[in-house]
Length: 214
Image (cartoon, rainbow, N blue to C red; front, side, top):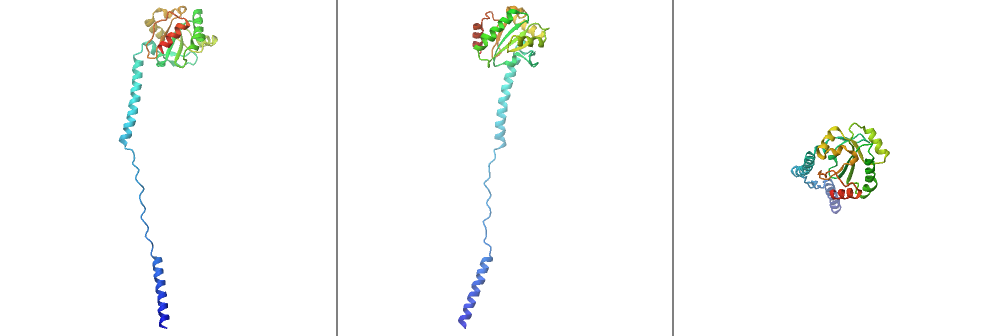
């Protein structure tokens, strides 16, 4: 009887101990903080941005200074006869520009422009060379000049000289600017410097001048 009672008590105490153990929660580890990500300092970011902005400003200022030093005839506005857009010769800084003065009635001018189209343009880098024809008759209209360019299939830029441009160009090159049959033409180099009026207007001579100026 005593053995039976002792066995029963043992089983009871074992059950109580097991329940107590199951009821006691197992402590969990505290969550760990993710490693901190180091942000770039604002000072470093500003330094980089400022350096880029400063470099851009310096380039823009240098370009503006170059244009500011250009002669008046390079900075006076002209109007594209085909599109009506305003431009200046200085807008093409960085490229070689071949300019000629014409009149619509001038047969020499038409012949010389055919030389441009058929012999000069195929022999030069047209991505780096700009061809411009300027009508020296300041009272002509853009519409008339655009029709002239289309009629003779001259694909480059055309504009009518303004009185201000004509005066400035005449001061720079002489009255030859106003004598279209003499085919006045000149080259503006990529840095803005320029030749005088070219006396040899053959295709090969123009190609040579363009290539030397490029």
